[in-house]
Image 1 (cartoon, rainbow, N blue to C red):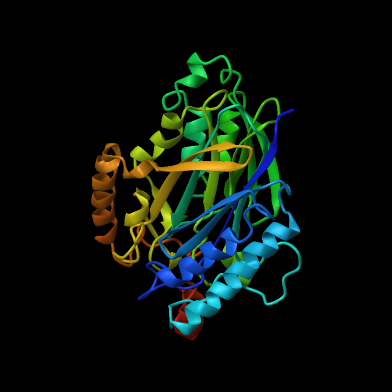
Image 2: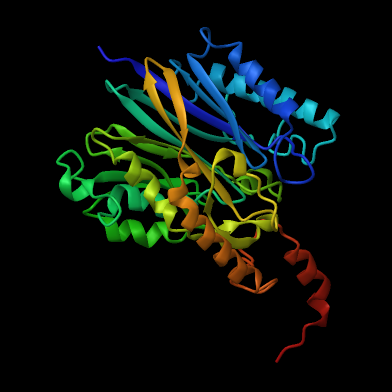
Length: 364
């Protein structure tokens, strides 16, 4: 009987040095020690990293998704870490922790969550993606390319295990509803929705047999808080090899930078720049938006790795292109398309400006 293992990423911005850059070593070390103490008890294994100012807790366990014990561990780790961040005067300390009352699950409380329960294969491979300065739907385009675009994923044509396609679960993040599409049969209907990234986000991808292939966090922090408190900065888990896209097919969409919403004040479009862990320090206009990718092997819940995928020189040209794309957008300053339209802006000063000027408008 194969082992059933749950992989969880729970992430939050609990404070960073000198603005929205990176957490302090002391806060990171505390989070690592807090999880390490649970290895062999609540957790099988763990890995703690960060992308920009977001701390990412990657945990393996046997509790299933939405487990109170796991979410409580993450919440308590973040709360105590935020106190350390406050002691150091870090910027935005605890900003993603939107409540003082933990109710058994961190969903709707600020942190982002991506979890999957799987039946391990003999050689289980997965990639953990973590982004900063971007939106909940930032993975729409790459997920489509990984699991539905044969120009990216040759296995959709060549591999009998992939040839029948995949199922996409799409969330309407503003309407609190979901819909499931089959590909390739409903690819055009799927694209009609997921291109509207301010409304629709791909939550998960499944094989036609029902086995999970990928899951992303789709929590929109400003919709939870009712005000701007930070960008959504999603995380994602993607299984690879042996019935799923190869690791190279999973990461290749990020070799072609694309524009997403986020960047400075959560109110600008910018390019998604793939970087290694050490370079996930967004500083130029609080960006450009960054993404890291860590590849792991998994056996009975134990992690081997990671491989820092985007540290590969093969992504050097993607970084060069992203910088060029950033230059083009910055040229626009406070003008669209660099500035997001009012309905998408996270930093909502515009209503106040319009209210102040209301009496000065004249009918034409």
